[in-house]
Image 1 (tube, rainbow, N blue to C red):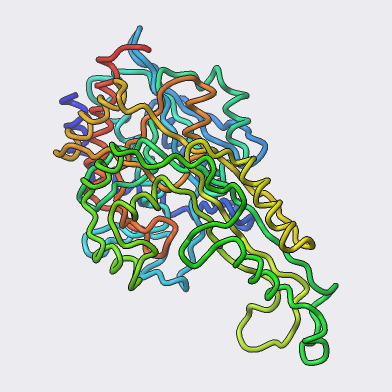
Image 2 (tube, rainbow, N blue to C red):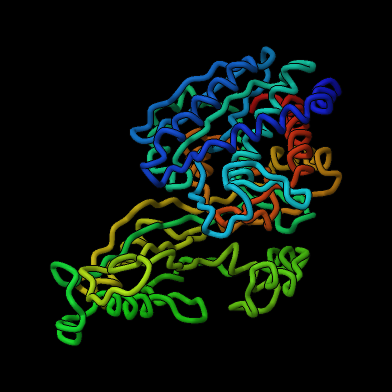
Length: 453
């Protein structure tokens, strides 16, 4: 491992330049207008892996292709499958960015760019860890990469890809770095993720937009109807009124309550960072429970009618809300989507509910040897004992890889909770990049000592 770490020390600046090239691609998956840069990003990554001695090729998914790469380990050594994604969220300068979203810019000692935290920084750190091992003493284990291009749109085609290529993807364990530390300076290992149901609720109006001065007050306004409908689903306190929504939710155990109480969360600083004067709950354990182990319903955007500059007086032809529900263990996406459909049908029969994507919750076994190995590796990378935490976000691949490959999945985040993923001025700490490469090098050597499963 010593030679691998030495290679990191002598090539760190070159690694940073390669990360800059990676984030320069606006690889947005949700907008078809970005198909070309998304493809160019994948080709860049494929060539980058090949130049480092891995075999690499595309995997057809029925949607945006995934990228597969591998390098063998010593005879009899275990193999780890590393998952990540090369697609990113949309970003426009006018949304509040302090610099060009797709130019890695150092601001106050931090790297700012779209995707630098979610997930290009961690993905590049994983690739660099493998490179360091190859250029040092050699890989201690076999390595496979599965890098997808649809994570930001719910991994629509990934499960089918895993099922189709199960033999190719088979490994002794899976490593994912696509979540967050609980605090900026608190290394963390994530063992639980919420699931998600993402849907569209559409309320119809007249056949076309109508003059509101002539027809207003006679024709129902779909935006008003949509607002009333959404108000029947979510209350101001954050609770959800969909029938059966909380039936399968596990109560917070005393052990987890004690664990959450140890998390270093300053609520005043948290409010200030979010730019809000108050939270829906104001006690630390309750805040963490809301973020990690309780389900939610959120409205992400409302479209329909006129949203351009200036005034236009119409009764719009439709109104549509983009919504999601975050799910916790024992909640099934299909059942919760059906419950949402029933609720909408009861309160607004004319409305339509369309499913965009869904994924079940994920919980890992932290008592097993893989998480113990990850703990030791994080100490090498960041010089501190990591906290075991859960995360409110969703990574559909985690559960699918665990279930379909039948192997342990470990979540080793190297990004901080204040990195602003999905927000303007997404950032990544340079020390987390270097520390992440060190931690991943150490983890590969820990796996070698464990042997095949």
